Length: 140
Image (cartoon, rainbow, N blue to C red; front, top):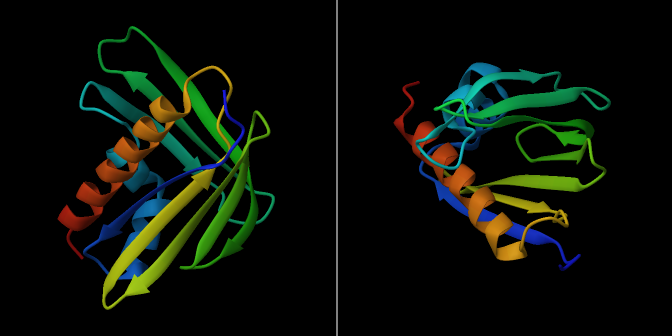
């Protein structure tokens, strides 16, 4: 297993204000925070402040498994970046960069030790792709 950080990224056809809102609003998070259509995110909570927590429940739709995913915000630059530390001690840093009315989102995270790095990269990328699809399809 590698301890090298992993980065996933996408460009969303929406302004950074809309992207930031969809990324940090619990009602939105429950609409995109899963890697495939057979999973769901029935609840999410966000206390968007340094020292605040973010948690999300991720579950298989068939009820076969699920887990809580959470962490504590370490740094927040509104509409620019978020850094938080997962409950297992790994760090996650996400940036939001305006690119001519579109928003480039990049998330860099410390890998866990149970699964291969490529599997982790694929799962996190799938969630980011779900986020892009949700945000681009959202009105307003």
